[in-house]
Length: 232
Image 1 (cartoon, one colour):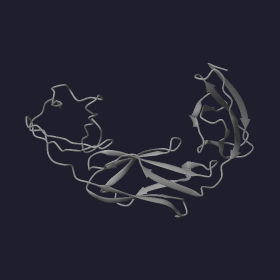
Image 2 (tube, helix red, strand yellow; image 1 turned 60 degrees about the horizontal axis):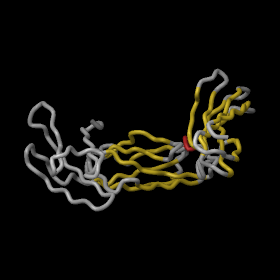
Image 3 (cartoon, rainbow, N blue to C red; image 1 turned 90 degrees about the vertical axis):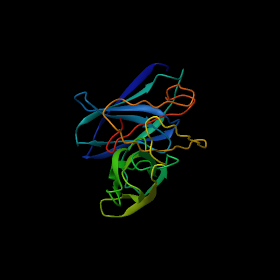
Image 4 (spheres, rainbow, N blue to C red; image 1 turned 45 degrees about the vertical axis):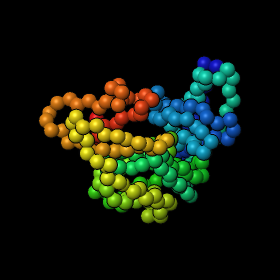
């Protein structure tokens, strides 16, 4: 029913990782609680991804599903012990990659009842890039790009078996920005550009578009400013 939630209990028969696997009418949001009422995890359970969580033998866990949007909803799921990972695919969510920025890589894995935390991620050269964070449930990985070059991102198992790899070509910024000097930027749809800027003195600096309206998340584009370590 609309604006409702349902809770189920599960007592783990053994210490292991279990996965709530979607079977039919997916795209539901679930919460996992331990017997003390502490939230362990929460995520969408979707077509190709279940919600995995580690359990201790004999402990009881609560699984809550929400429906706050549909007048009526029906979900069919199954709780199973996590299977071994068999495959991973990696893709880029960004059209371009420049030194000094963060990009996102998407990944999928299978089977659907596998535990994505089994994936061991690495980069071939941490002088070029490093992994900022990984979101297993939503299937994305954030990569901080440091220097120009080509770096390989690898997904492997603990025994060293490589499941997938993906090369990221890190380009240099188009040029330098100078205070008071205009720069013309021409981009194709869903493209981006990067420029470097060295502050001549301490202070606040402002970026403006050609019609003297401040660049923001509007018609003219979205501006992100980064230092060498983090987003500003």
